Image (cartoon, rainbow, N blue to C red; front, side, top):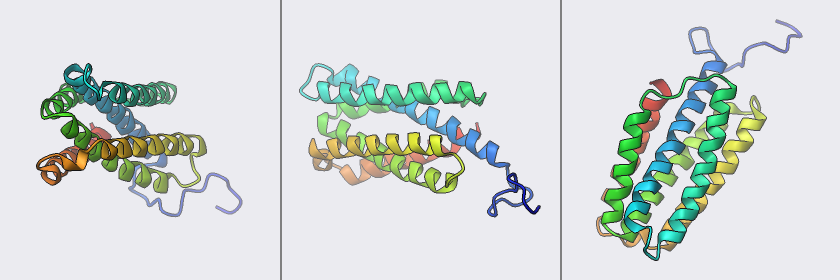
Amino acid sequence: MTGTATAPDEAWLPGDPPPSARVAAMLRVDQAGEFGAARIYAGQLAVLGRSAAGPVLRRMAAQEAEHLKMFDALIAERRVRPTALRPFWSLAGYALGAATALLGERAAMACTVAVEETIDAHYRAQLAELGDAEPALSTTIETFRQEELEHRDIGVAHGAEQTPGYRLLHAAIAAGCRIAIRLSERL
């Protein structure tokens, strides 16, 4: 295919999903993840909204709402099927947020740290996979990744790591996030 601009990427092999299918899966899972994050913050705010952590949680929730709005627009623009698991993520996200908030402000922040560290790794993998193929999408993902890292740092600054059982809580939440990512890419 000499001289064509449409030659497949060298990493693409026959039998692999086409690059457009991978981008669709990325958008599907990113929209699901931002929806889940919004639901986690909704659950945390239901419990801690009037506490000292309330303003910080509201600020992070507002950023997640902006992320979700962008992925909603990209899903519609590119005609990508959203995840079929959205009703489950709505309940699971809210429950996780409320449960960690009921354990206290530090546990709610521990949840934020675990989620955001997992999302950072997820977004970094997506950026590596996209390479130069989708510059606008890559810019959006990188911007959101940086904001997720800010959320992680806020969680650490608010005592996340002093939560009793922090390592176990972090590991459980991170594992749940990784499972949610895999399921949302496909379903």
